[in-house]
Length: 441
Image (cartoon, rainbow, N blue to C red):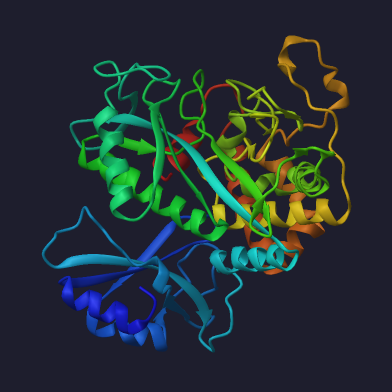
């Protein structure tokens, strides 16, 4: 689909009866409204007006409406909906009623970051490895904190009871134009992982928000509950969103190590991420529960990098003498990936422009006692600390805009205050976390 005419013909020829216009709030939760085909052309030309006052982090009740404009490139049929009277979706650009850009439009923030990278003569491909848990549902149809199976890493059926669910998820993603690469049972009981192909930052963020919807929907259709909560079980593996990044210049993929030694562009990009990671952790790890995951079961805690060790912040695997991609391992699936990638890209540009250098890699486990951890910086210990760091960050305000940055901080501070007023931060997962994250994410 490249023109409005193409879309209108597709809708008519494929018996499309409902069109979902989708967007996300400032924390990455997917929202939508449905319109009839008769309203689609108007949506493209004039936008569809909605009341934003009840969307988290958008506008106050006294402010004017906002407009949704469908992005033609995101047209996708929803395979789980009826084949007669089909349902399609578009992800949308958001504008104010006067058609000026809306500061809380996460896709716009990422698009600006992509354009900034392009102006530097660079491009980026982003891949994602997302973990999630499947839990049982009780007789009343409500999820319960009992894993769907007791399988472990790379187990097979019948002990892996999610094999057919993962298969259906992957096939559904393919029908929607998203290319999964690998699926497997992960290390935790009832825990799974699906990786999908690298693409542009905006396309990958679009794919991620679609992926989460598909996982939730297909799991529910199979009588189980999927959650992206980072740490639903206290003594088990947490669920991470490992972001793989590859940097390109003039269409050529750059490697950290080349015949001359370290490539300054890639080194600067990775160093920039490490230098800004504490400032952007409140976005990469936006829940109180997110910080339960750090420092255990291979999740990072120290701000370090390695060629081999998977428990460090950034892993730069080396194959045949080259290091063409690197993986950021701290984010979790509750992230708004649009905003996260915007911050990551700008941090990388900062590192390049300031010619930042990488420290020596730590190619052994930090936790075996052979590394002087006193010399290493650490990630924020909890959401409260992460928000305090973000609040002082001119970098975050420059990338996200002061209005959006302040909204994120304000809302999350309210969340923290509610937590500390009714809970103690103990080793076990609190009722507050179960109520606010297990059922929401």
